[in-house]
Length: 324
Length: 279
Image (cartoon, each protein chain N blue to C red):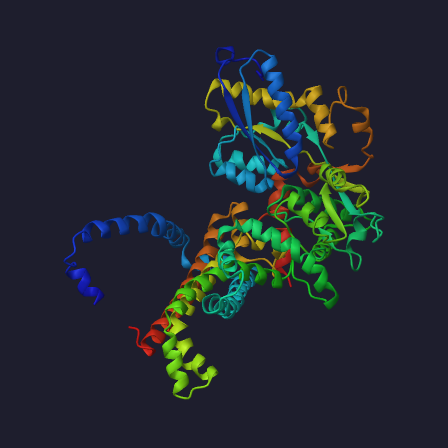
């Protein structure tokens, strides 16, 4: 790994890179891009311009596969980056071992956002399928966050006394009959729940749930932490096939590497991600996260196995809606 | 007559050039994309195509898309005619403003239309709240899809019918009246037949636009498989699964159904033109 400051010959070039990311990272990367640009220039390099693109994780991956000229992808789950690697060869197959922590600079989890006072008494996954409860979650086919939601529900059901694959399947089947709207991305679902007043509970990225409370008022919503959830690791990767110059390569590599710096980690904490290093973070940002039993994707055999089994054509999710 | 034009070009110069330009542009803009879609279909083969389309969820989506488009266009057919009639025949304060506003659905980005309609008809929206006591839900139901399609299809009927209404000789109606016809009879036997071809064209345009509409509908539809999931959304979902063949299969199914419907409308149109002697 030869990162950062290795291309002095191109130091004065004006370099531009495109970071293709998923839905709820808008605020995070807005701050991080500012931090990185300053840091990069302070290291004696030329100016850099970072372009951002956000959308549902699956759709973003497809855009890159279809030719969107991204130098860096920062998506919701490794299956989407795997797809780019497999379909285009622009990312090496072993991309996830190139950066620390499975190439995930920050982690998150799935929590419940409910209306103030929790009028429907929702405390854990089992409460979501009670009569009259409406659940808002995006479509797992198009949204990475929704896939974490789905698997978190599955993991909970399986962990119940007497839980088996069959009971888990029955539970998620039941759960989706309580979903009145399937938006295509996480941000769309947040809007449906918060602005349109639809549903009693939103299954949300933890950072998205906090953001909703900050933006829309602590008097309207509150967060409920379920007993089991997922250890969501949104990974990052360099799209080597879209690197057009050594200068661009240096910037793109440094851009990813610097995500692990204490300053960048502090930004991740600030934006409600569970990052790795706390040295530069505001202790308050770290302390606000409750402990939560988080199941790793490796429990499902990794995304390479979970993706086709649950979300592929004819997979478990399709079976929910192809039945009667 | 058409065949003879092809055989002996008109005495006016420029036929070769304009025909060439027409074919080039038509090929690049229309024929190539459709050809690519059909080509993909040929590569897959009709048996596999049928296998990919023949599922409960896809039939539900196709039937929803065409049903909603049909209902919305029929509504627009009636309401668009009334609107066009009022705009042409009556003079009132604000007429020009309304006339200009009719085009707004075409100009507005469809996402904006979808979000605005959803905000209004959502359970906490202005209309949504008013309708809730009656148990009527609009946003996230099929009714919401109708609303979105009515919104985007309306200008097509109004703008095709309006100029024809302007052309109607009022003397014809007066003659009808002096010959003893009632108002309703004149409307039914004199005015409407003249308008039928234009109405059908407007209806066909609105229908074609509604069937493929995506941007505004996904915001208000709810997108629940088998209930409120439109066919174009299913195509996008198949693309997100990297299943390009299945996406093409649904696309081809929509193309075939649309083509059949437009053909049927054209046949009716030719028949109605013959009937009132416009051919």
